[in-house]
Each structure stands twice: as C-alpha cells, then as structure tokens.
Image (cartoon, rainbow, N blue to C red):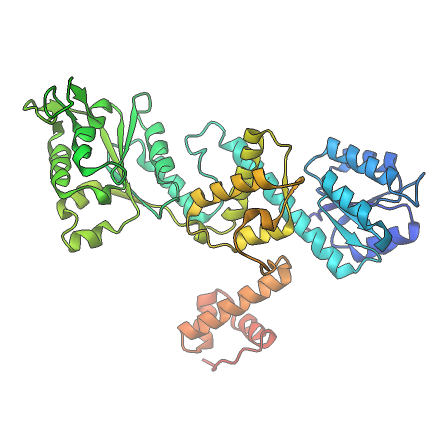
Length: 454
C-alpha cells in the first residue's frame, strides 16, 4: 500500500512557475489555483494543511491587493492552514504585512527548491502538532487526566498506571522534580477512585511552619494553645471519606512522621490538646522531589514510614526527557492564555519553536506555563518570537526534519551501539538488531562502519 502524499495548494497565476513548483515539490500531492476564486474553491475542496501563494494575483498581478485579500479570506475559512508567501525583493514589505495578517512565513523568489522544501516541511510538522494537540484536548475533555498533555511513552505509561491504581485503596507516592505535575496526578487518582464524590484535601509540608503543621494536619481542641478559641478539625479529618494529599512529604518533621505513621497503622488521630481517638477513613497520596530512600538511610526520614507510604510508586519524568512534549505543551498554554488574556490566537515563529524544543526546562511544566504566559502578554504582533520567550537562547540549532537524515543518524547510532555491545561480532549484532547478516553488511557499508566478522 502506497502512503498518501500530503496535500499542498500552490496559488500562482504564471503557468511556467506552476509547472516548476509542481516538479520541485513532487513529494506532495499538489493542487494549483491561478486566482482568488480558484484558490478559495480548492481550499474548500481539499482542505490542504499548507499553501504557497504569490501575492501578485489577477486582476492586480503587479501589486499585492488581491493577494492580501485572498489571504484574509483563506485564513477566515481555515485559520489553521499554514500559508507561505512567495515574494520578490521589491515586495518584502507586502510579505511582512502578510505575516502580520497571519501567514506562516514568506520565501523569496526566485525559489531555491531545497530551502522552500524545508520551509514547507516545517509548516506541515507544525500543523500536525497543532492538530494532535487539538485531538488530545477533545479526547481528554471529560477525563480526570485532562491536565496531563503528553504523547511521550513514559508519561503515557504513568497515565495508564494512574487508571490502574486509582480504584484501589493503596497508598501512593508520586515522585518527580518540582513542576512536573505531581498534584495533577494526585487529583486524577482521586477523581478516578470510588472516593471521587468526597473531598480532596491537600497540604504542602514545606510551606507551613513546623509549629503550625501538626494543628493543620490533625486539628486542635479549644484552649490547646494561645489563640485556640474553638475546636478545629485538621485537614486529615476534613478529608474523611475522601483523599488526603501530602505534598513535599520529605520535609515533614520527625515528630510528625511518627504521628503520621501511627495514623497509617491505626487509622485514628488525636487533635492537638485532646485525648480522644478519632477514626478517620481517608486515602493517603504523597509526593516529593526528594529521594526518600536516601533520606531514610541518613536518618532524616523514618524507614518504616517510607515503606508505608510507598505501597505504589508513580514516577513522573522531567519535561526534558519527554520527547516532543515541550512544543505540544507550549501550544496548549499559548491557546489557553490567549483566551484568558482576550488576545486573538497567536502563532509561534520557527525560531521560537526551536528554542522551546532546545531549552532544558529545569522548572518543568510550571516553568513552561510561566514562560508562555509572559510571551503571550509581551508579544507585539500576531506571532510569538524567540525574543518574547526570554530563554537566553540566541541561535538555536535547527531541528532535523529531513526524514532521511534522521533515519541515517538513528541507523548509525543503533548499529555502532549493537557492535559495541557484542564486541564487533556480526552474528550477534545482527541478532540484537533484528536484521539478517546481509542487511547488516549493507548498513556497515552504507555508513562506513568497520567491524570484525563473527
């Protein structure tokens, strides 16, 4: 079965240039239009993801009035379409106007086929990311996991494990760096559990002074201390029947660790200043960015409490390890903040997308959210530029969109890694790679890799 070529609309009134573009863009299923009426008809009929257009269309072939009017109508009909304007040196100001109106990019004539192909490839990739993001939003609209935007296999595995663990009564520990979304996972565990109709209570152990933390957790009786003018229930008791989330549990002081352990063993609490044992039915979920096992080894965290809390462990990978998620999340936050700030839908420039993909995101999703919100507010026009992100990246490395280059690099890395694993043995390397020996010899020759025969 042959793979369907992506649909590409070329708007050009010169028959010679039409033919030239068809020939140089044979990787696509090209449809052509020579004027505004034909362009709009082809757009409605084929719904192409990407369009190239010359602004000089009849009846104004030497100007840009007709072309800009056509662009405006096209974007009104199909706002997600990526329009690439082809322009001569003298028409650069018109091209800039077109981009301000919502065109994806512009390319100078006469066209260099390789460069134009690269611009078109990137436009298709961006359109595909945006469509995938929209599909994810629609499929997750009513899901408790709606706050998790990802296509990374490791993160999707976390989501599947949340669905498996949620119906149980097991105590869950959620591990991950700051900003990875531990509370989002905790809330999903609650919403997918039989306790979903009851309360979800959360407390951050690192944000509350040690002197107040016990009363926040377990409550207090009237007169227990100065200012205790009435009996007050703690967060654990208020969560009766539901879920209690202990964030940054690694910062829990040792005396409170003992009291939490007693609660987990006996399921009863005592308010500060009280002597009555109160039975509480609550599911415990905790989270931390620290290595609790290492803390237990140094005596800073109770080992018995660690094992009580970690009946089930879910580890959220950092954003830098989630392949493709940075751009996906950036699109999600950009759309959300455009709605919140009352701005028309913005688009990212190619430079901005490259910076987003390259940045290490040490603050993870929380950092991403803050950066994109600031960029939406600070962007001057309809496009978010790299400088609007303020990530301190001046010249991001171009991302490899050429599939042949990506495949060759992956093949080279896989073959060399396999040969290193088996000390150059061809037979064992072919078995490890899952290919025949003749195929492996072909790969060695193609990539100029030396190996000992086996």
